[in-house]
Image (tube, rainbow, N blue to C red; front, side, top):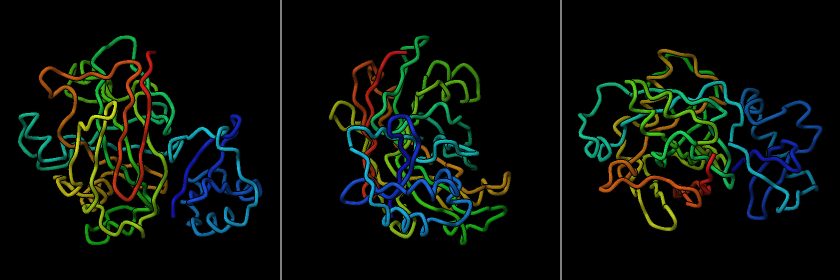
Length: 282
């Protein structure tokens, strides 16, 4: 199954994604479960799918604007320097433990929405990533049970303002400018992706391939990350974990490639979909 969050004439909604387009859940279902985070917390994905399939009303496509898959997650945990080829291009050694930082919900937009280069920097960089969403409460989860806690997967663009990122040893400032990242276009539930390591990620800038890598090149895979993160915090339904980016980012190129207004960035993952955004100036 595939689920998406969206707005129609400014009103939030969510529903099932099918070959025929979006099938929103009806208002009566949203009164009980106002968003996908609430659906996951209740373990009600199957009920949401059934409600959407039974709803005869469809929004006109031109009126739909996509939100991040989970518009207001309780936690967004991001992993840095996690692809082996990316670690090499950065001149680092593979870390012994996952490098974790956080993003705030306001730093993200949905697929098709503009991503924003901040006015205080020209060093706005792209990072295509796999993201996954937690589907059940998890604490001290062993690695062999970790994938049971994953509700599904999506594409992620971890936009990075590099000069701010490098000002301290912490990544927070460079990763949280409003509208600098993107998350979508939809959530593919985990039963459709039994082995996320078998997926392939491609990032294109204005049609040119900038990143192309197997997800299996990660130093710490999805199960590793669930197990590790659940040791220092309780993971909750709707929490988002991003898994790091492969090699090919803009700052590592000679000369560097920075995002500029008018650029079109696409992050595609086989079996999941295509996240597409256009860059605008703040």
